[in-house]
Image (cartoon, rainbow, N blue to C red; front, top):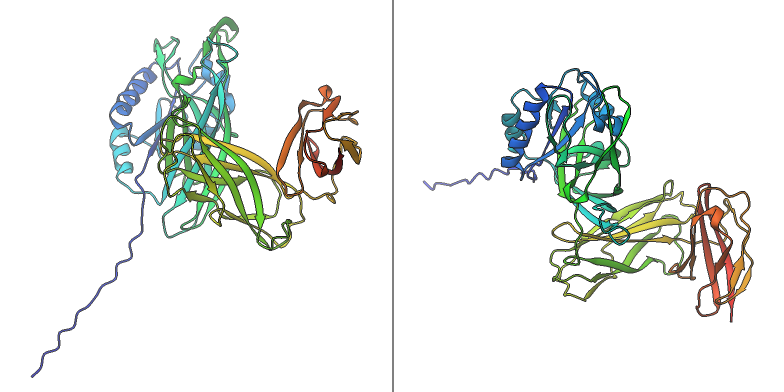
Length: 468
């Protein structure tokens, strides 16, 4: 009798997951005696768990006298996070969106629970030291890269915060030094909507600034002459994805120090262009287009594992991002370049796209989180009907000055000129409308150009012919 051996193969579906960065949020105050111990516990915990714990501390205005300087510096973010968790006593420590009773154990339990999301923060910081050598302040851009490695789409909100540490100030509770104090949330305290499908990458960019002194109040809550200086070298950027319907669970978090690259990792981007698939030079409804640009390594080190991204900044434009991220497959030597010129980055105009201009923000990020970026206004259409605060002539000479008289314009104005391919040729003006009296045409070849005027009330493009 012949025996038949049957092999049963069991197929196991494995969901790829990412290592979790845990978010710890401490609600505290410089007037709360028990908060001294709470702060010390979190500081000690962070010393041993810094690889997988990000901390943000929100300051409250109780108990009396309620003169905590960081609460009064930015009431909106402190009140928003207090209200989110319904906190009525401090110190309260929240681990990934849940109030904790066993702080360190809860952090470790969450760290051992894998996340469906992977997150990374890239940042570029420019100090003001060129203007004030004594200042440790400046401004920058942070880019959050989020990838859904799970098997389900996620609907949540992305929150970002700027924190500061090593602040020396002694309040009524006697605590002399304060860390991870929430200074700002970008763009606001209630986060930004995030819809991310399985195997999808989303990037969001935010500007930040370290440029303020925190006023000190006396016990009558009156301003004193003392201030607490925020220092960029002691600041950190934190980002997290959090559910807002039902559960308050934080799905994933990320953090990075605010730092100037000092030319070790320095990237720049040029030659941004939109290449439509049809090749007619115009983005039409339902048409795809490729994003091309050049990445320059201007730093002191060879760049490995660099990534490029793009984001559409202009709101209410019917364009869908189809390929938002691309990992550069080669190293870029010092002084070298890499040209993104294929279909690595793509967008598609929706059926209802009406040809309105939109701003394309392009980014390049290094393995250690340094960021390079540049923006470009695309899809210029001389037939666009919109708000026009400035009357321009139809013809002008190359290099000539054009006198302008803005018509009831207030606020900020930005004027750029583009060639017929959509490439930015020059910035003609950027500043307050009250300072706008004339613009100088660039020294370019004679031909047809488009002037894009951005104003608080809208965007307008106008065709101009430059003559020799």
